[in-house]
Length: 420
Image (cartoon, rainbow, N blue to C red; front, side, top):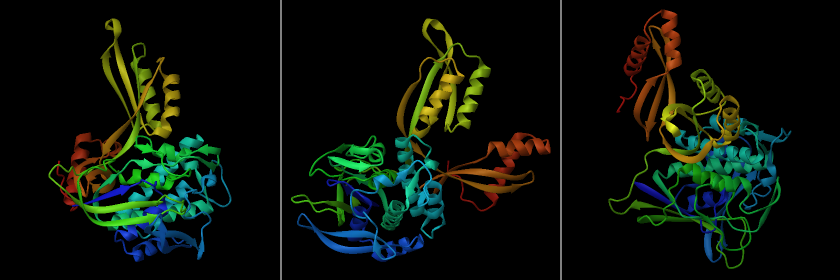
């Protein structure tokens, strides 16, 4: 089992991560092919540099052979994110389509899409818009897309099963961005680093970029740099600046676990917001309507449980689960649709299985199966309720009969056996 450790004592950016990957053993040809697969005219320029007496690899993004403006600099296009349409911009759906259509390893593509999704969500939260509305200026998009996709491909090629990370040095001082002159970390970076141990040290400059922070989150890093590790390869990736007396590099180590106490993280995770309120004066019909609306407005789940409130009053605990960017809208909806006078909210981490849909043919028509897995192992498979309900009504048969037929069709199709 391979374990990777990322040490962000000088922060992290996309170009630093690419340089460290090359020094840790990733063949440059893999990264060149990844850049070419995007078909946006992006190339990589790779060379050795000195940063504070440490030899490191520097990677620049080139567009049609010319260095992208600002590429490799820690000031990564903060003015290039817009809340409105721009004639020379790409929005998140366009970038998602671009990455999805590229010839990349499946797992690397998933990491790249997750990183960009996190980046779009962070920018959306800062601007007060939906992630689909976030636009990246053409220059910033070329640099960021190339950094993220090439890094995802390089990371995937290492075969690492667990990623560790040190506390993240975000730098200090101020950065100019679309919001004006802001203190480091930039707003999107700060949003992405919620829950991550951070600190400020070294020269007054931005050390961690949104791209670097998004990659740490997409990898599902465990922030436990003290875990024992037998290191086999070390790589240093250089940032664009070379301040005196400060080694502006990212260190990437690849090794194997030491001792039986090393825990393997087999599952992925994300962060969600939990909205909760207790109601003792709302009718069941109003409650059901509020839950239905919450799901229609982007809630991941909505639950109601009976509770005993003060003075022995019977009531209902209403819980809504959502992505952070949906929090404000769903809070307004709950205040509008229920009688609550207050809503508790908290942000939590959750462990989730990977999910995908597979359509099977049954005697009642086509039914989608939801497949849940972890690390390539299928753990559960369930027929989609709405598909089964529709088929049951159309054929005037029991819902259970349709569900059983769907499971049987999936099992007979040669799909992997359900393990649990």
